[in-house]
Image 1 (cartoon, rainbow, N blue to C red):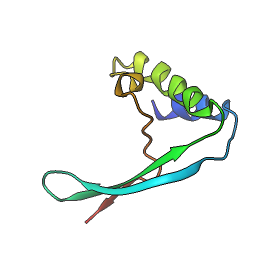
Image 2 (cartoon, rainbow, N blue to C red):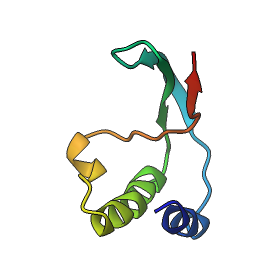
Image 3 (cartoon, one colour):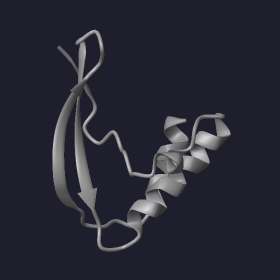
Image 4 (cartoon, helix red, strand yellow):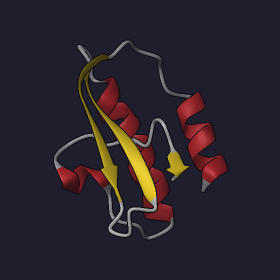
Length: 81
């Protein structure tokens, strides 16, 4: 899946986004933290990115991101606490 996503995103156009919000989340056990960024773009690049992820998720029978009614990306990663 990683390689499929890497290839899909290599074909996507680049764009500038504005960071509109920031939140730190953690799992129930408080063993991992996640940094989330809320971003907005002037063009339709987020829809293009989401379509690329949905295509990959469909291959692996995972739920599609479009059902979330928002754009969510793991931009930063996961840190062990």
